[in-house]
Image (cartoon, rainbow, N blue to C red; front, side):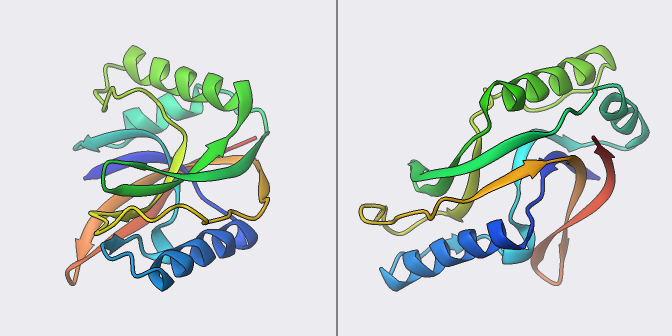
Length: 166
């Protein structure tokens, strides 16, 4: 199964992100928009793994202290459009500790540096971000989810299979 650790969003944050995607569509930005049901912030992409139990144990070993996240300006990595996220030192520390726990358990994962962001559009036809304003939106993170990614009827579906809470 294909796994990743993520932060999921409450309704107000989701509405802000969906509104931003509508703004991009209104500017005729084409591409592969993330499904509203799949909006999340990846902390660590694990990839294909046969047994999720060692990942769950690693996640349990990392204490989660609640922290704030704030949506920031939109940006892009090439033709991938995103909304930035600020979570301060606690977010960075948690992501680092989670990766350390995965290392200690011998679990391989994508080792790209952690850049807090929420992907909105992949393979965007145009990068029209100027003038896109993200309303001030904050949330308190009290849960980290282990997500399974799979293809169903030609669509990517993310399902929470485990979580740790503060």
